[in-house]
Image 1 (spheres, rainbow, N blue to C red):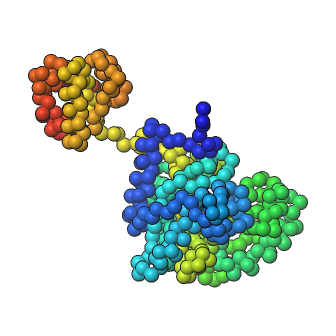
Image 2: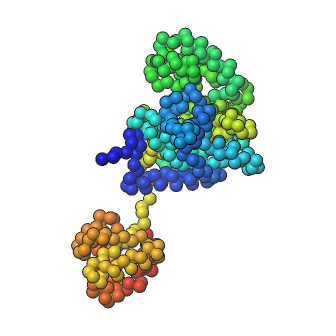
Image 3: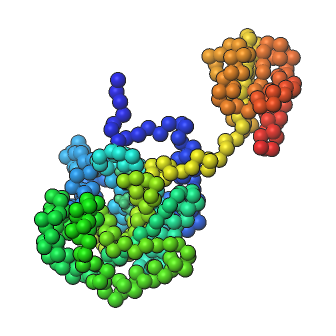
Length: 418
Ligand code: HAM
């Protein structure tokens, strides 16, 4: 038997209503904030991700699904959506548009991580990218959109953590200080952090291993090395969030696992999620468009993990599906008449179904019950000949006779009343 790939999940029909609710809510909130959908490819040339996410990040070092194309070009399944969106922004010269470019996307991403609850190798993100302004209000718009979207879904115990990563120059001033501090604690750091000390020292602050956390408890903080502009940008973001009544917590250790960030960085976590507690995250990436060969364009965005949202979604939030009709047709004249009734109902916009494996009335009623159909049309040879059928309300068991030609109108008005 051929099985699915580890960490790659099927989403079966009894789960898709939850997914649809999350996706529809995401689309609604994106539209309210003026973001338009972009659909970018699932694979790109590998250099795009290596250059934007950063060669020394976990994602690029060990998590990408990379393979040679037939001509030898190295391709990669997208591990996130920002790099592809920026590539598309540059390639289609979107900077020339006088309107600020505001995009959202929903779709699968791929990372070769160790699978566990809420961590998959194929997972789905809803993300937004806002190009063209360095104004702190854009950061707040993006964070507020994420917060309002998650709150609308009534996800429990959300915390917004936020930090400023400063400008490139601020980090350049801070990194030697951090590096020499880490050198002085090197014997307490895990192997991975010792390596990061050389390649990506900021990430040491983000290590989850308790001994590393303890060793870096009193590390110098980037926030003390912010330029006046960066500090003012951060203060504006925080005060606007407060004005919008969006609660935030400054986490000076928040550094993010992707290299393109500057200034604002944020993450929303939930205590209901276990180890993989980040529901969504993002930040500003003012240098990325230029780094990838485009015109200097500031930008800010976020992405959320849909699996994690679906996991936390309370089931009572699912909208009830509209009632459907089961056509119980049997007998040599009843069956073909039933096929016509099914067709007429569907053409009229009524959800109608039958189980063609069943040939008795009793069997049909059992299947109608199992399928959760609200009404059944009972249609045997006698009914077919008389040109009418018996309608049964599956809940009240009340029955009445209706002429076949009137069935679509009859059900349409019934269903509208629900
Ligand atoms: P990220 O923090 O790598 O950021 O991912 C964002 C969210 O995707 C995470 O908070 C988490 O909910 C979800 N996620 C990540 N990896 C997995 C996984 N293996 N399984 C399940 N869910 C996962 C980014 O991807 C940036 N592109 C966000 C961004 C957009 N920044 C600016 N614009």
